[in-house]
Length: 434
Image 1 (cartoon, rainbow, N blue to C red):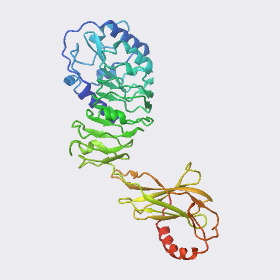
Image 2 (cartoon, rainbow, N blue to C red; image 1 turned 180 degrees about the horizontal axis):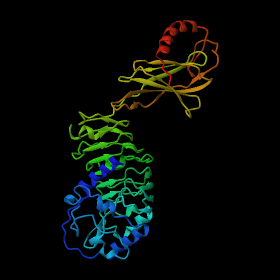
Image 3 (cartoon, rainbow, N blue to C red; image 1 turned 90 degrees about the vertical axis):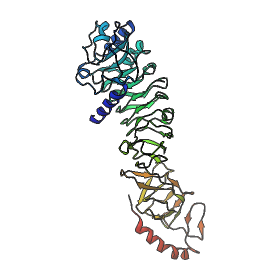
């Protein structure tokens, strides 16, 4: 919670804050009052956090969204039903321009209720609302249905809330710059996009049940993004080419399912401590000198397998450069279930698998290595060309069965075994069972 809150404080303090001039302010207008009444029908926010936990720099607001407002602080009075006309001038977390609500900043305000109902409550101010901050309101539960209508948003902060289900398509938010949607373990999908080519901050980290392909979202924002944090989420996709993005300063994607080659405009653009790709499929490209990028490893080639007497088979392959070892997997139910053995010697290129039940087996070999973060990185598994038929006893007959990979005894078998036995002894010494 402490790390998440610090990150949130930093983003809001330096990004969403506006320069507010203290200009004369009209009374809260009818549509804004309607929205506030509807919000309070869900729950009335507790103003204590807004008043007692000012973020550093919140008064400065760095003119990022360029509005002139009536107040210079988020601090204010409690929300009281019937006093909505005073909201723009006095209510905590409510900032307005000419009577129109532009900012609703009520994080950690102990709100409870239905998230879709709250989203619907904001419809009257959908054309004026620039920043929505509901961080830490974990008891606002449900999907964000209706959020897609708030297409004027530039700052969206729903992290560490009770958000669940599928996020609606937010690609219509063409002005969205800051999207904080992290730490929502019940968020499960994304219906479409998140913002467009103006997106600067995208935080989806710690969404362990979020299964979504981010390829399109990341591609759309590849030249505008400054900060990407999708660590420890179940998202997937391909990272785009960032070689034309001179603004990117933070890239933490560890534990996600993204892949691709990371290219940056120049080395040193991102500090090493602001990059973490551990456990992903991302590899180092141009401009990444000095950064620790998850290494890649080539797939194994020329995998072959053959029966090796009763209840055993011999598996061989071409060794892969830089491999620390190999995972030999086999299945006798058409791939529904796999067993595996791990070999910790990256130079070996064969192993004998014994104590197999009779049946027809699929066989695969995967190379692996360990990156600097201690995470095992695996290649794509390579299947043997043919299934292997394993029997409970050696089958008499001459020659080899080319179709099944089953080796028969008799005929030239004796000479074959004289050659093969020393090799098998060497392979057995190398074998390491999981």
